[in-house]
Amino acid sequence: MAHSILDISQPGKSGVWLDFYAYAANLLAKGNLPWLDQAQFVSFLATAQSLLRSDVISLPLESLAEALLDDDLRAAMKAKSRPGFPLRTLLQDAKLRDTVTGLLVPLRASHPGLPLSLLLPSPRRWLAGAYQSAHGEALDPEVAGDNDEIDSAAVYLADFLRCFADSNIDALLLLENPGEAPSGAEQWACYDPVINIAKHYRWQVGVLDPAPAAPLSAGSGIDFCIAPALAAGTPGGLMLDPAFWQGAAAPSLEPGQFRYAAIPAGATPETVLQQLAQLR
Image (cartoon, helix red, strand yellow):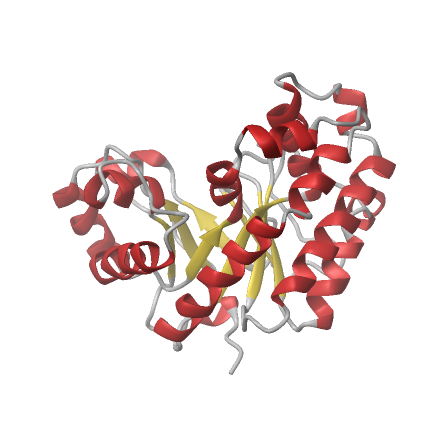
């Protein structure tokens, strides 16, 4: 049964989507997440979820992919100089695909009543990030922002996502670098390969920009946005300022909106629990 991200907030209930990985890693795993051990990872997440109770279960692919990067994979990613080659090579890696599948299946089985989302860099962000990981230097900004290169990255990502057709996930959340979410129809169109594959599998698609230049609004095919400020009528989540975890008040919500909160790694456990109780 599919779950809608937008249903986590209901009349009388304020939904909270928590990014608790950095915080829970310090609290429960001495800072080292067991990404590559299925049983340990599922146990870790179950413990974190029992303490913090996010209304969405999520699996962050960027951190998982970083944990898998070794010398052999880096060498393969930089074997050719084309800007998109590192990302294409990474996403075709059998170990990455198998590891993601191996985690999604038990996460879905152990949390049947909650939405399950993949968190992954947007095509634009992962194009530049994979190049940096392979070559140890930043991708040229003009190349990183080229629509044709971003479109090719989206094609690689769409092919990768086909591997998870039977994993019963509910949503994709595309993570942007601050201020880099698409701002017009032409830029949003570069993401069409990812959006189209998601619609084919009936996954919702969201985009997160931690520091948009203006209140973020959804593009074509985007079901929800997450940002510190949303354009009027935009469905999605408001990101909590880090000051919230030091006792600041949470922003008010429009009907149907939820809150998205990244708990800082060094937050005080007592304060975290107190602030989460306020949200709920």
